[in-house]
Amino acid sequence: MNKRIYMIITSAILASSPVKAEEIDIKIGVLTDLTGAYTDFTGQGSVVAAEMAIEDFRAAEKGLRVEIISADHQNKPDIAATIARQWYNRDGVDLIADMPQSAAALAVNEVARESNKVLLVASAATSDLTGKACSPNTIHWTYDTWSLAHGTGAATVEASGDTWFFVTSDFAFGHALERDTAAVVKEAGGSVLGSVRHPSPTNDFASYLLQAQSSGAKVIGLANTGTDAIGSIKQAAEFGITQGGQALAGLLLFLSDVHSLGVETAQGLVLTEAFYWDMNEQTREWSRRFAERRDGRMPTMVHAGVYASILHYLKSVELLGSKEPESVIAKMKESPTDDILFGKGQIREDGRHLHDMYLFRVKTPEQSTGEWDLYETVATIPAERATRPLEDGNCPLVR
Image 1 (cartoon, rainbow, N blue to C red):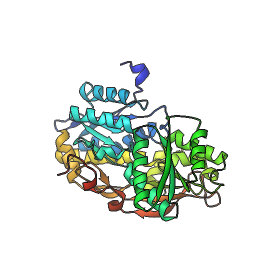
Image 2 (cartoon, helix red, strand yellow):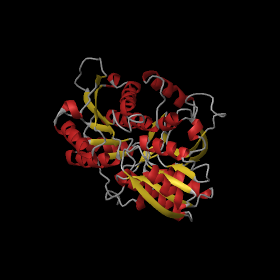
Image 3 (cartoon, helix red, strand yellow):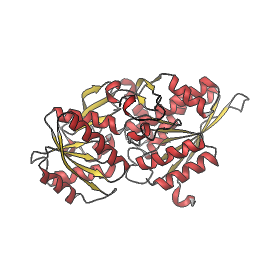
Image 4 (cartoon, rainbow, N blue to C red):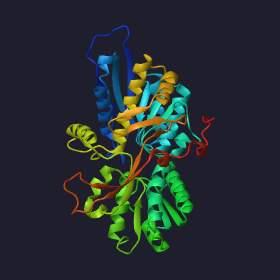
């Protein structure tokens, strides 16, 4: 593989104490999007979050010598799988973290299983990672298409948005998000009038939005993300779709997306997230430290997921005194999680991390008091309601 084309590598060896017999060397690979459509909510911010987890855990003081490398998988499953296979089997990487783009995550999920190494998914959305494609080597931390659908989808139907038309990214993530949200809409008594799929990434949403507009649906569900979501929302505003009485439902939007759109354009959008920087004093303090390293940019829920998942991994290695993959994953599932960003939680046997989710509404320009003061909390969705029931996932690991 040509590293100059496919890999952008940074390295930070976060230890200074002399080697001792009881010390454990750990190598973490942050496999992410450093140059593409998802870089704002993953990317270099995920590397920073990983570094902060190691520093806050005081890994060096506890006998863990940790090295971080990172690479750009270009949102391509074949490149992601090639990098993962090289990292796991040649370069001594113990775990891969982040993993945006669902098709890429599913590909690396299989490589992790074959290599018997750890995969901590913070950014891919497909619920298949803890469903039919579940693996004993993978933990899915932050959110999935089921939780997004049951947050934004159910709330919108309850608010009289009972007819839907989907504008969907034509790849694994978009298909899963449309599937899960459509099921929620129908369960809640609504109906789906149709859908259209677009390539990703794309810059022109005119024909797709016009089909959605002509459907007469009360709600246009945007089953896309990143620059696709931003572009479709901007063009919808240009076409006067919301002024005409149809609502937009952003099914996977991030703080960075809303910041890019601005409250003038995004005001009133309802969205589901697992984390917001301004939730309490602990999240504010951590986010300020993150922003100092990122030119003032606040973290997204993905960055929070990278931090929390790696922190829990390190705690489990310390408890075991070993980094042996099967034992570490078993300890991660056995031990309750507790961190300043997600609070208390648990990892189920299918690999899904359980925590509360939140329904947010984007503030109006009059309500917003600053550049990153973007959300008001509409509702807290308890973990048991924010996560697909274990028996419904068809995960082969579940007995």
